[in-house]
Amino acid sequence: MEDNSIKPYHKILSRPIVTDIIREILEKLRAELKNNPNAHYSKEDIIKLCEIRLKEKSNLPIKRVINATGTIMHTNLGRSPIDEDIWQEVKDLNIYSNNLEYNINKEGRGLRGEFLYTLLAKLTGAEDALVVNNNAAAVFLILKTFAKEKEVIVSRGEQVQIGGGFRIPDILREAGAKLVEIGTTNIVTINDYKEAITENTAMILKVHASNFKIRGFVKSPSFKKIKDAIPSNIPLVYDEGAGIFDESMSEEEHIKSALKAGVDLVCFSGDKMFSSVQAGIIVGKKEYIAKIYKHPLMRAFRCGKTVLSILEKNVIKRLNTEGQFKGYCERLLSIREEAVKQKAFRIINDLKGFDVVEEYVETGGGAMADTFYSSYAISFKPKNIKETIKYLHNLDTPIISKIKKDYVLLYVLTIEERDIEYVYNVLKHIEKEYL
Image (cartoon, rainbow, N blue to C red):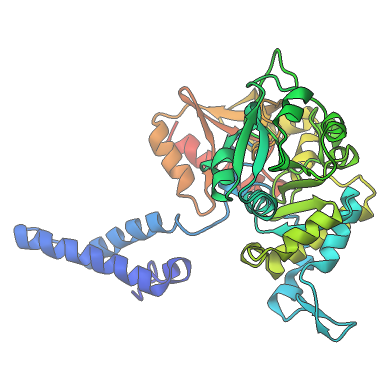
């Protein structure tokens, strides 16, 4: 336990877990010695076995990795990294006491997230806003508030499933709502919406097709046409999901345009194109936001100081830059291809066996599916792909790459400048041991 090669794992895994792993290895060795009395293990052998097992386990806790997959906001790799300046700004109010739910001016209990909601309303042009812990919770809470034991109209082409098994029909069922399907996979009309409305209709739900695209003969009425055609007491809700503010980034309706068209509630993720922390952001009409806030489940889905403080600083930064703010994904996609190419050559430098190849990157994170951007990757063909990937994954800072046929690809766009020397040294070792 106190050996210098074992002690560092106390901090990574915790002392009790390290103890359990060592005990497990010792029990196996005792059993082996019992069956084979001639076997022999030195102290160094045992420590080495423990090190191997502890190293494997050390990849389980959340740790920093280098994303070289070609997917900018990789859901499995934490989506958008948090802005470093914002992280520093919120440090003190997270490690010390803060006024999370205390109104200093009124000298008493306050409303959690009150100023953030004001900021979000200003940013989006909505009447009011609300934040919960993720967008799935936002959709569920909206349905639970307005559609329990009532009907929700959804186009067949928008009954999506995203990663992890989140399915719109299942969410409606769990919320106690009845799904009313309209239209076909590729076509839905105003008449489809109008004819589906009954006295038991709670809302019309529009869902962003986050991870797929239907192309060809496709028709769907605009938000404005839907809103103009339905009774005013039936809310039109849009699960936008991606958090797109820059209309040049996508041909689809974004948050501001949806609200301007009359959509009553829009919800989206905080850690996709919004480039902040995981959260479900709901913006829209004040009367609807107020009802959601009063729902008993709001407390179950509410956010804490870390999420709210990061979001608050993010929105302030956006407002202060007068629409010029670029989130993580937008910032990377604004980098010239030639600059990415030159970065790739800087990384491989004088190494042999590595090529810079033209490739495509995607946004990922359930945003702008089927949209790809020209970029560059470092390509190499190792003697043993499995062993090479294992080496990349077992680094102190693992590098997550992509395999294409017999080649390993490191997409350069998402490799930070500060990591260039580190990646170079890794490739230098690969040149020596794996090529």
